[in-house]
Length: 207
Length: 230
Image 1 (cartoon, rainbow over the protein chains, first blue to last red):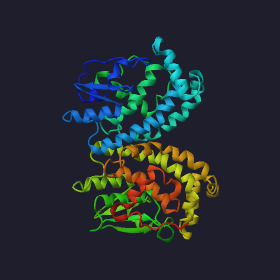
Image 2: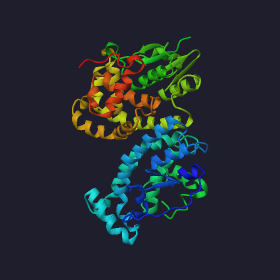
Image 3: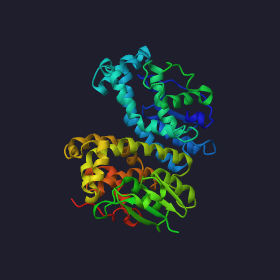
Image 4: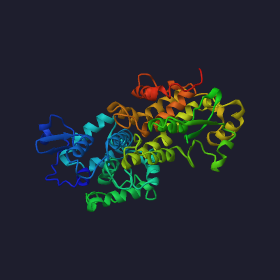
């Protein structure tokens, strides 16, 4: 979304397997995404956004200045700290179904070790837990009641942070993690329409 | 004509309203130092009768008055665009509204459940009947907040994690220097400090270091404020 926002053409999207990070061995670390641009490589989505903002300063801004960038980091940490664990534990077994067959053992082993339970147990009870998850979205909901996007009248990187995470459930599960009457749902619909439906065209469930 | 801020007054000139603090810090940030602080009691809002509403803070600037701390910050930003910026542009303003919502939905309610009884002790005796009736409508019997502080502190401190991690990456929510987003969140900690409960944040917490930096800001403006002795 950040690349599309900057109007940059992606020459190549390189798939990397969970069980084999060889394609990014050049970076000396094993976290994706990794962006390469000429001789430069950058890992970590927030760092990538900062790189694009600085390297393509004449393109539409992702942050709207230094203060906007600083506050986008708070949105990033809020998303990481609250929403990622909440969503992962509700969807991890469904996610497994969408992992490549030859990656599934690796995926199961790593996740079960990290969360200390089986994928099946982790996901169990999500019909109850989803209510608490939706409640945690209150700051986002209140903000979107006051303005069309987190970034104001048009979307920018703060929106992509949260929206990017919401693409994860859409890709792996029919589980309705947001209710249709929620203002967050309407915001997500407009995000799906951005850049000629870039995100909507990704294979996924109509949730 | 000097700017006037009508703010809620507590016992021994302790002014603990987090919303008033946001406005005071915003004024200092803009360098509008020459403002008059007008105390208003909880039970008697006649000093702001001119506004035909009861919400405080109210800022008066010449012929204009503005209430609601968020609207006051936006007013100051727009009316004094040549002064240091509170938001750093439209996108920053929009994101600050999210931080405002986080404080309103998460940080502030959690703290209130921890320090409501202490806040009650910081209310002027003459205002206490009014305050009790008003707050009990929202929160139930005040006495129930005398206990359970320690059990509530852990989850509340956990809720501050996004703030803590962000402040591990940068000095302020606004980046290298503080901005309105900092004052929003800081106002709530000043509320705790004013009623003698600054230790809700542990000294080892990076959030504490950040509070200390903001207490020093503007020649220790916030640090010099009267607080309830404990």
